[in-house]
Each structure stands twice: as structure tokens, then as C-alpha cells.
Amino acid sequence: MEELKSKIREIPNWPKTGVNFKDITTLLEDGNYFKKVVDLLSEPLMGRGIGKVVGIDARGFLAAAPVAYRIGAGLSIVRKKGKLPFKTIGQSYTLEYASNTIEMHRDTILPGEKVALIDDLIATGGTALAACDLIEKLGGAIAAAGFIVDLPFLGGSQKLKDRGYQVRSLVVYDQE
Ligand code: AMP
Image (tube, rainbow, N blue to C red; front, side, top):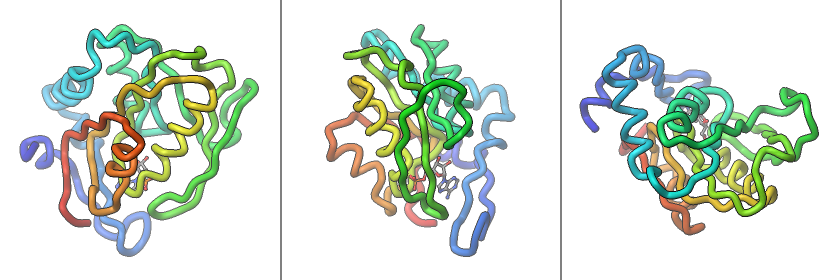
């Protein structure tokens, strides 16, 4: 974990004062670490009959797509409002530093399909929980959630665990 952490760039007070932004682009730029991230996120999902990996706009796509490929699942995307061309369902939520609405295509998850959710980072959990709500409204069964970074002091990963989801995070910070 410390090894992965050393590759993440921290940008203090971005995009606003008080947020210590965890920039994972520096981690993914290194081929060995990119592979390690994808392998570690894929490991707990292997052989579990997961039909779709759901990635969250936009940095979540960077991990969700290779994980889906690695485990032989399909890829579904959660996008910010107004970006998806077909019929959508939406959910509003509060982010650590903004408020937002996310959407999924109405036909992207099959009823009863096993789903794994992937994002780059979980903070308050607002984004991930809104995505879980959408997936469940579409009839999906959330088998697991995976994040490159967890900021557990903001409570998001615990909220997911409280809802009964299995959560895996690769790098954990104790404070901003
Ligand atoms: P939250 O909904 O509070 O769990 O925030 C998670 C989402 O916001 C993820 O999609 C992250 O990409 C982004 N995010 C929130 N806080 C940070 C942070 N400190 N560094 C980088 N990304 C963040």
C-alpha cells in the first residue's frame, strides 16, 4: 500500500481550500503500478459471476474498464448529467466539494445482474451511494465495490459496508 501511495500526487487546496486532492494520474502513468492496481482490484471479483463492472465518470473509467476486461465482465458507465445519449435514470448527491447529478442508461444493467462498482476514490461516499442506488433501481445486485483510494475519516466506505457491500480499497489515508 505504501508503495502505491508513494506514486499518488497530492495537490493541497485543489479544487478548493481544505481539499487535499489525490491525483492518481501519476500512479497510472507507471505501467507496473497500473497493472498492479488493475490486478488488485480484479482479484476479489474473479470467478464470482459478475456480469458488469460499473465505472464512475471520469477517473473511475480508467480503472473500471481494465478491471472489466480482466475479469471477463461487461462495462457500464455512470456519467454526469446530460452526457448519455439514450434514456437515462438519474440521482442527485453531494460531493466532498460540490453537488452533482449522475445518470445511467436505463437498459445498461440486466435485472438480477451481479455488479461490481469501481471508482478512483471514496470520500464521503455520496457519489458511490448514488451510483449504488441507480444500479439497484435498475435491478442490479451489488456484489462488491472497489476503490484505488479510501479517505475513511470522511465515512464513505463505512456507509457502503453498512449497506452490506464488500469494499476493497488499495490505498488508505488517515487524514486530508
Ligand atoms: P465522495 O462522493 O465524497 O465519496 O467523493 C468521491 C468522488 O469525488 C470521486 O469520484 C473522486 O474522484 C472525487 N474526490 C473527492 N474527494 C477527492 C480528493 N480528495 N481527491 C481526489 N478526488 C476526490
